[in-house]
Length: 222
Image (tube, rainbow, N blue to C red; front, side):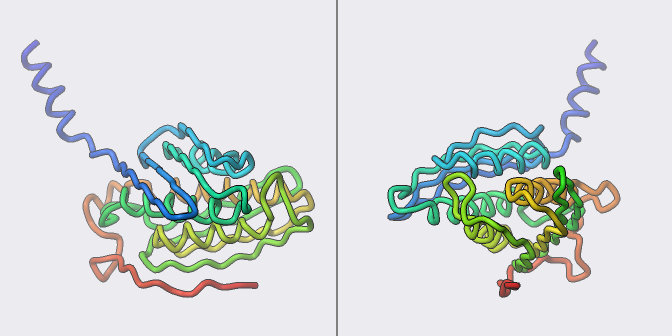
């Protein structure tokens, strides 16, 4: 029994450390708290005061296998802009903090996700060089309480603060709900791939430079 206990302790010592982070950000416009576990099972507890945004962030958790807790209090009496953008900022910061030096990760991820008639593609590089390419068009001005233009603001804020080069494209689709939901699901699947540990890289930083930088870059507007 003692030998079995020692073996179990040894196995426990070899188990990788869970990659978690908590971030809180307070401004005159919003107060947001977020916690992530990159080695989770996709559990989500999201409360932003914006039902449609909650639904989208739940997709990131579920399909990315990232546990996410996020609570936001914002100036919704004005509009949804600050709460939407700042939730992207905080979630991006939490992801970057949980990744640390980005050792041993796959780094790149891509996903092609259908949702009924809509098909969207996301490709990303956890590069430390934030950049957004956005190729998504809507035919309505609002979804739920959100102006559709705010989705780009969320992806921009997330990419900038996560240090991710992010390409988002809807190849085709007619239902605006399906279009944006397929984008968030594709982001989730691409993140799941990119943050996964690469057993052949062990503790190495996935870059010939030996470090993944944090140089901010511009975003690409269609």
